[in-house]
Amino acid sequence: MEETVKEQEKNQNENEEIKEMGQMTLEEDASRHKIHLLSVIGEIEGHESLASNAKTTKYEHVLPKLASIEDDSSVDGVMVIINTVGGDVESGLAIAEMIASLSKPTVSLVLGGSHSIGVPLAVSTDYSYIVPTGTMVIHPVRLNGLVIGAPQTYDYFQQMQDRITGFIADHCFASQEKLEKMMMNTSMLTKDLGTILVGNQAVTEGIINEVGGIDEAMKKLHQMIEENKQNNEI
Image (tube, rainbow, N blue to C red):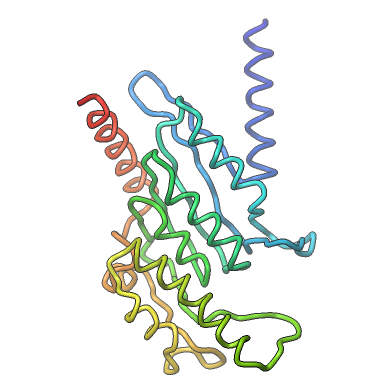
């Protein structure tokens, strides 16, 4: 009876974590590993709350959880599922930096889209996948609201874009110069600058490691966890 109650409480906690934060931990069995599943969906919310009817990923939920994962010896690896339209640059980069600094093996899977600041998130893991129909949009930084038309403003925009392209270049096979060229492309989007990469194009450009789905991503993560354990035993 006591085990049944504990199991019900565990399921309730898992359902609440999925509902509130889009996260859950895949429990290990006798032959598998314990993997934390992190989903980055909708718009990445910054310092201001978005509309209540908007799908968002809140950085104040994600950052403490990533710190907890790093400190939890029972978690073997992290799977990051991405389908985002982008969002707040500072918050997106903060999440990407946290994922990149994890000592545990990490794999990302782009489903639907990984646009704008979603690109650094996709490449922040140790290995990345994109489904054949998945898209990535690389475009310049945008700013909402009042903008002061001064040289310092444009310098700030350039600095922010350098931070983004620099991070991406450090975590994939595409150079910063190549990324900047794609960012300023005028021939693809009718109302904006930038480049759209679909599935294998993201791999060809050196941004994503491989085309694949959840099966390939999970197998790769389990393989990386095994290799990590073997290296730590040496």
